Length: 62
Image 1 (cartoon, rainbow, N blue to C red):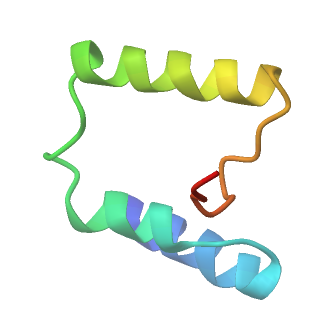
Image 2 (image 1 turned 30 degrees about the horizontal axis):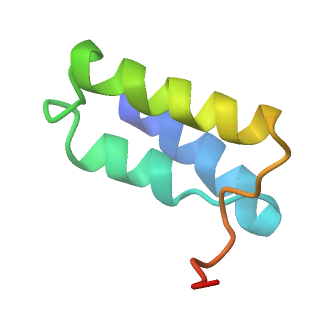
Image 3 (image 1 turned 180 degrees about the vertical axis):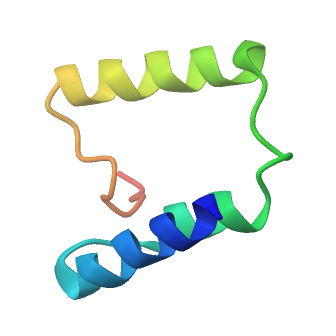
């Protein structure tokens, strides 16, 4: 089964990486985001990174 290979790769990754996104994809493969919804989010993320922003920064009021 294909999942066995994926699960073994995740097991080998151990604490080196965050496996939660991969586990979420395995848990719900049919609930993927439509391209019409994904493209604007990817564009915003690319602009944020290009401007030197930190996507993991907490929101702050100025």
